[in-house]
Image (cartoon, rainbow, N blue to C red):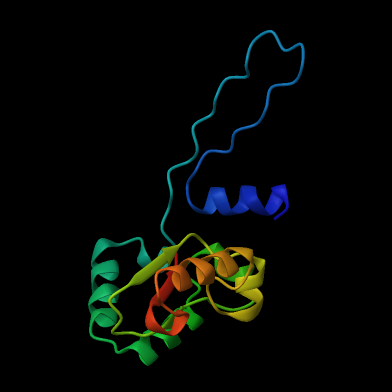
Length: 139
């Protein structure tokens, strides 16, 4: 991931960007606190958020997957190729949760398909499980 895109992601999440000091700098530059995260306009009102959550609470998996695929609530939706929802057994005893999807996951629309996915497959195999026996999700 290039540094400009990383800064955009961090800014969208309301996280401060840190930079290395240059050699010979006598004092660090003053730290500017990030602007507080502002919710997108349609959801700035708490009642609108509660109403939206209530509408989504009763959805089944296919409906929720469709809503996630159509979601544009944050700026990250502009840079994704597709959403990475989740795969596996919805009634599994094991839930595997990972960080935000990488480039491979974005390209294929499935979590844990890159190098981390190969490692996860090996780890699952070591404890006697297959990918199909667990549910995998990324946030």
